[in-house]
Length: 323
Image (cartoon, rainbow, N blue to C red; front, top):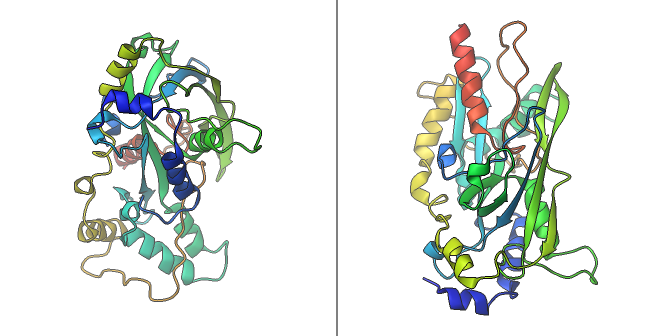
């Protein structure tokens, strides 16, 4: 386990971290507890907006010398309209391995040349979603004071990750490069969540927007090193989140996909033609669902644009209760 003195000695040197950012910006490299009390999310006010200040923390001590400040993984979340069943599973593409949904989506995509055709639309609706998880220290949360001064896991999407990346790789050479997760030279993050309404298939869907979020001026998290060391040592393991044991096997996922698609023992063959993997690099939430009861309220995504599995479970429960 890396010691705190080494962490301070290496403060300001984040070349290794920049290499990991390059992997993110050029996909192809390796690389739930989300219902747990260990996770933090911004608490909205009556208008559905939220404002908080958090500090992204360095790689946790518990994960060792090579720990990164974040991990990322992919998942799929969709409902088969014919069977009414939901598929909500983590994707093996997280490890650059074959995944049955990615193969199925590729077959759907390659079976048509019409971009707006039903096959390609289905592939888009079933595309994988990208999630990041990091440790954060909650500096200020006016709507949830009990969270202030504590360390949590925070799950977020591509938009916020882009802001982290831009701090480390600014547009102008004259701008300073800052590692926002550095305890001494990093910067607090003012997270501003506003509601944005979008028309989806004739329905108004509300989802959070983080465009106005920004990093504040750089500086130490605390003046006292001992306080920062205590925070660092209280971080949660990120390696545990992407541990292979927490992902189902290819065979288990394929069986579940067949169940959702209403297939008994017939398993869709892997694509033999040139693959085109449909990926989710957007921050627009997945919103396709079975028709709900008349005058039902529009669905509201309560988390980052690309990550609320609870929404899918809720929609599935609502649909089952109306049948």
